Length: 509
Image 1 (cartoon, one colour):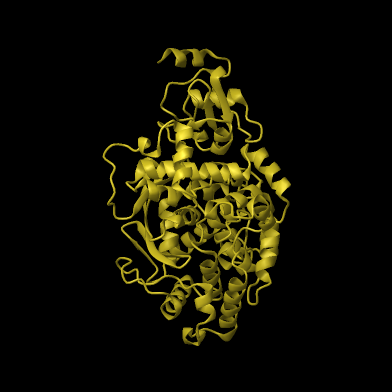
Image 2 (cartoon, rainbow, N blue to C red):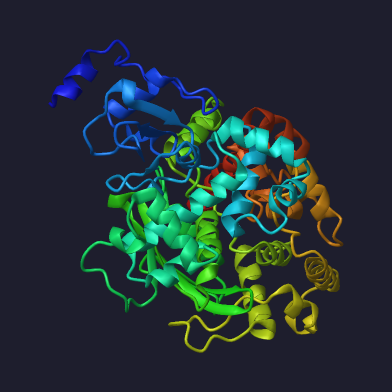
């Protein structure tokens, strides 16, 4: 044990009990315990700025533990960077789990983070971002300061730097392409930023042996364990649309269409690294942040699943379900419009039936990708393509065809229709205003596409069966009342009920 570690062991704050850290009021003593013991439970929750080195680190950094008096603790990488610290080259803060959902009931902050991850902050700045969330810019800045210790602009800037740093470390992309992919406006700005932060040009951070020529760009996306990969891949496999998605040998592949560009991705699980390896082949590098954000959404890597499960397990009914499936996630949808179409196609039919209808819709309206890989032949159609398509060939009832048409027209009229918006109640009301979308469909879209952690389609027959557990099946109203104690994580409770129902159905043949 090093001398500094011995001194840390003797400190009064080095107790065996681990405090719960509130991101709004970080306790330096509790944070230092996490740092001195390299407690992985706090990776992604706190970052430590070290005054003697000028760097900020993850709590699991392998470097020698700094003295307590030299440490400052921050609730986000953006807060540490805005305080003048630069990212550590050893523990690489850009690879820390990106925990958006752990921020408690501050769902507005989580919605804003999702919008920033999708495309940064547009020309309208913070005011435009706040307007999308149904609030004023001043209020949004206050919430960011409270929960993240940084402004929305600082968060967006830090994300850009950390993505660029990850691309430098993990790929052989030329520096000009790294700058473009990370969202820098110019090569000059990219070089100046890295020179100011690290005292060297971006190329000075690249490891020896890295070169171009890779087939696609492969990046690491980390999560906090436990992570039930088998359940999430089973969910995706059961719903995989022919031509758009494939699952083979536990590897997920799908086609990608973004702002007119066409490509594909591949996602592999790396349990030993507690990460996903994401390979992206796409012609426009500027789309990389948006594609990565969608991967995070589909595979729900941003959930602090231990905190969520601890909350839900207080209910004696859910406790055994959670113990049976630790790390069960709530899979998201790749695209809001695609997820909404899937929900409409799934009305009154089985999962397999909805998947078949989706495959016919893709063949009828989707763009072909002749070189996307084995069995990946089409991109999912855009709202414009569906709106212009004759849907009579789908062979489904007229009311549902009309609902698809209305959905496509609404999405064309409002490109931000499926972005996070206000509260869960406001989001559901907005969706229900579209012809053919009722309460179940709206909540399902909110759960999968908007990533609302408290969405709960209470009338779903699978949820009602899962909540029965051998007793009388509750009514939707009764289940809604029971679910009050599951807030703000009702979406995760729903996932456990669906999983329990699927197991019982399989057991009974």
